Length: 190
Picture 1 (tube, one colour):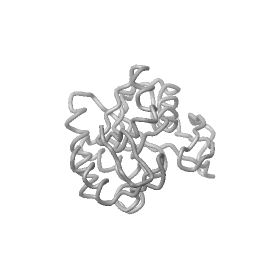
Picture 2 (cartoon, helix red, strand yellow):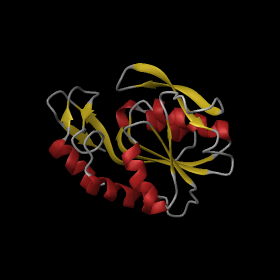
Picture 3 (cartoon, rainbow, N blue to C red):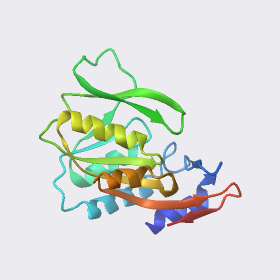
Picture 4 (cartoon, rainbow, N blue to C red):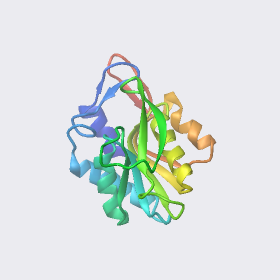
């Protein structure tokens, strides 16, 4: 999606060959108009799928997932990173290693919110090594839900997370695919 690529070129900052900072528009301060265009594109891409819920992971994916859900007229469920006192013990869970934070943590979704009746579209802001998306797939599989695909805003193609999931048969649709980045701040898109 050219609009997203242009915004990354304009406002993204390459911190290293593996870290792209896009928090001024994608995952800290949100450019709602840009996210709306991303959501419309995922609606176009997945329009022939019967989607009952959108699932994402706390916290960066929530904003873009909510806007996307409006186009599909379905609820958003997000995997929580912390157990709260008001969450009972009836939930699906798995562990995930955060590429950004460099640590492992458990993510959970209440069994009340996804089931074998659901056809799930996963939405997230980034995919690098695929750990977060793989965790969401694992939780959906635990519930017996059908994962129809994943909409990713930015894919770091050279880190192979999305390609490994594609090889397993999952449909991954990324709007901006980065082929490489370097410490001079140059970004090459696929």
